[in-house]
Length: 484
Image (cartoon, rainbow, N blue to C red; front, side, top):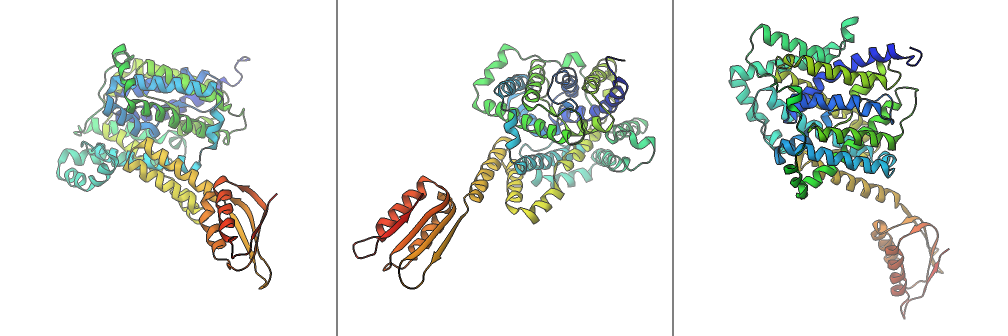
């Protein structure tokens, strides 16, 4: 006990995290189009591999709802055997980024883009799981999922089995929402676990006709990528998916680390080492053919709130997952799929920052626009391109705001017209500058003072010189330029 002074607190916290992780691991795997056991394998690796490595001491890694849409698209497009290659390559890319000390640069990413990404994922996740809740096949595209919901609702309400499936999903969501309000010891049980247990008990007791988890066995689900699957790396689409996996998983993990650091007073996250820890975990997941991992804020916050003191809690949670998956696989076959769909609908709803969007709209509408455009782009196109669109819009917005320029024109009616420019004169503000200068009297000399400018880019400098030459024609008084 002297070597592990906090073992009691860490062991208790690990059990809480384990109970939170089980339904989420299963739900994410099923929603990703993969065997349920692969979600547990990723959770086990997150505890036993990433959990042992330095970086962030208290955050917990595993399969995340934030990558569900991207993983489903990858499995649907390239097949389940290719998933291991994609995750392995993404993990190696994360290791390289960590070795190059790029971890801290993820902190510079626009928060609105990250929130927009999560909101877009949440919308697609909710739409897809609404079909799963009714036992129906979901369309492939995000827009098709949303547009097909009215027809799916009509089909669901017309059948006895689909209605029963919807009732189980709705009951799961309701239990999760109400469970945390329970007083006493019952409220301490994770809501997702309570909902799954209740749904399993009800469907088994009353023989409710709903689909349940298909069990393959933990070791039978391990699918190391073979040499025949390495050919997918020649596909440009696969390479884009690898980059998307690596960047999105890294950003989500490091943003989670920053959030977890605010919840405790222990050691702070070392971002480059945490990025390498995530890369090592994803490399192992790829070698096992499992799902990609990220740090998960739900599990991490549960870990902190349960009193964890060291990384031992997250390692032990991986041990409990391994024992559960290896010793009790038959339990998985009892879990109804609509209950897992309900858990992910609830998780998707929590990914959408409704309050944050309202706050941004009242305070910084430009950031709110970036958030909304990113979310809509992910729904309309796909994850990777949607994030790129959001990042591009964020860069344009930042460039526009940083290129503020002030023009002061002083015309005393006689003598030269004085023009003072201050701030940052960039090509984005060039139309405004030229409109003002070209509106000046043509028969008067002009004194253009540029000494107060912090920055004058090449486009503005060239345009001002050309304007001065045009204004200082043979019949026009000259322009006097004053620079530093």
